[in-house]
Image 1 (cartoon, helix red, strand yellow):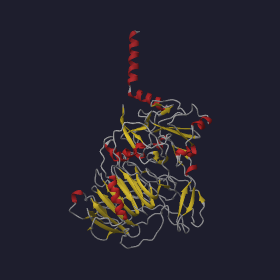
Image 2: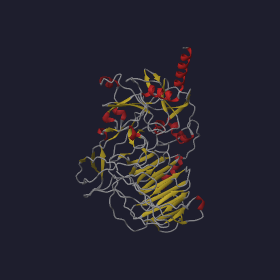
Image 3: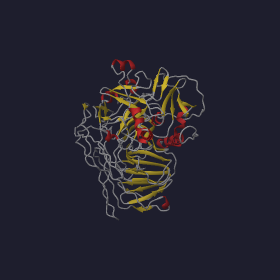
Image 4: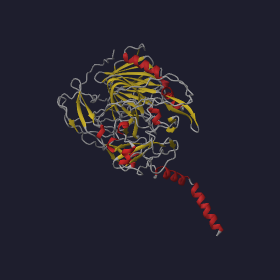
Length: 628
């Protein structure tokens, strides 16, 4: 009998000490169910999503799986498959570690790919306009590619590169610092520091020639000012090395204090007394990451996509830095009528702040009067102003939600539905399609579809059937056809070895502010060329300028274009005083502003996207006009 008791005790001890049992218990305590999306299944990395770090003027972005355009705001995420267009202004995109893409007025661009698990490739397609590419980190040559209707460019060294793209006349590249390979239909050249090269219809007008690397126009001067601003040195005293770029903006807008057991934490300044995390901004849906928070605070990108938020008497809300990116560190709750969320604590539980008492290990039914809870009606999840749509505790009690809210750390299993568009007439014969985002709905999806696709697989991007004709002279409300999933991915073909098959240059695609002055027939997706890179061109071959490209061809993703926009969000500011021990007084950074373009995609090693394209005439002239 005694031996049986000992055996039973030993079995219980083994069971309790099992990692699987402990993991299940932890998940049951925290969420009541096992989290369907684990770190092992997540396909994105810290570099998989870039963001708008500066913007001025007006720009638009079309998400890979949504219909229409939305107006860009600061801290907007930029992901694979997005299309960007700047109508009036300038824009800066931060991607990777200290790498920047800067776009000028009237520029259109597609994001073909960004790094993810299994691939470090970054590719952009510039349809027209003017861009600066500043590369401060390049782990491997040719990991960054730029494609235009005339040519392809492969970055071999860190440096500064300018491209001027005229969709009808050609492309010019200027290398201020660094080395790039320029590939056309049949030849490839190395373009080194202080050299320029012109290409038209896939053919080079000459070999690379020298130029004086001085500021010649307003875009050059703006690039120089942004370069000085982003390359200011700040000692990395509080943040992990990968986040050292954000030291300046955090020091400008808050104070670092030491708080056991977390170490140095950051306390923001000049916030309203009723401010709370994940309330001043909006949600956007990205196929790779799901619902992603867009904060309107100028310091919001690092504070809401890395780290955790806690609360303390005398300090208010404070941020604990970590080095792992996430679309939003929140717990979710939903029912047939509402969506709710609260920030996750350092320990992985939903944060609760009730009567000036902070709880970081709360589980079970969530209190409606917690200062950390945000609840909106189901049709307001995509509101551009969550702080205005958030419901007060008394409203939630009146809806009989007491003891019914139980937050879960699962990814929200919903995605946006296509919503109503209206045509708004602009200057001249241009129009833009605006989306009524306030009344847009979401639909539930299976948990499997929320998991990141394995690296290297084709991503199907939804396209819109745009057979309906439009007339700018008679604006009217229209409802787009329901988006359909592409039934087949892009196909890859290879030309015989030693032979390069000439490729026909395709016309640039329709933009969100394109003229609809006449009747238009339905547009069909068309593939855009990507010019093969020569495998013989590397940094070791810098003494040679001319190479023949090997025979390769790549499939190119293309998407249908329809436009919509939203009004940009505002940043809430206020005053709040608290006595804190200041440990740093360094401050120096300007808060970004906004602007963007729209474009179609094509390229090597990438996902399949579908977009409609429009036909336009092409000139045979090889002259590229730069803005003065």
